[in-house]
Image 1 (tube, rainbow, N blue to C red):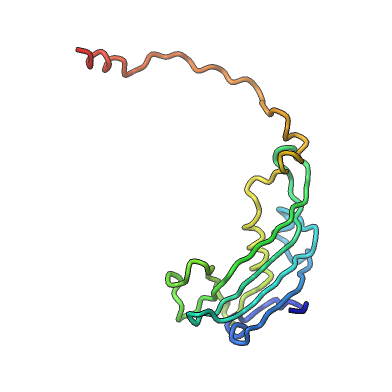
Image 2 (image 1 turned 180 degrees about the vertical axis):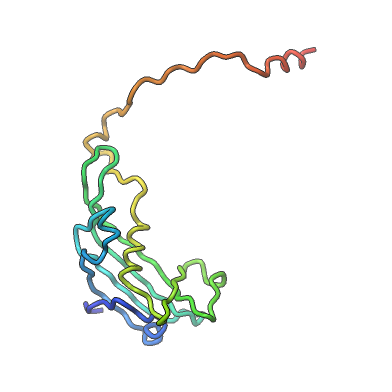
Length: 172
């Protein structure tokens, strides 16, 4: 597979029939939503293979790799992390029901022209791959080895058990 310019809009059904494959990069400035949350530190490498599976469904296999700059929630410093995402999609048409798709396939909706916007699909996958709480590895984090205790925990009040009366009835 040689590097080519990736299409912005892709007809997955037609490309699946041709068994098309694409390999290329997308510039960082194309991903506005992602750059607000976690700025990209390298271009996004994308490999896309379209084909027909054994059931006769059009499928797209998407592989994405890039580096993102995240903020560690433990020490509040930035660090870079490598992301590699792989997904398999099946375009939803009138003849394919979402419930009948194999579990390995993610459904992807087509626009009014029967196409998928590839850049948006890549950005969505990277946003889903972001960790909920980004942190360095424990051994790499400056605050990782420190005990993080903020304030004192007061002991709980010793209150009588409200069910102690029932315990006395049980003995009788």
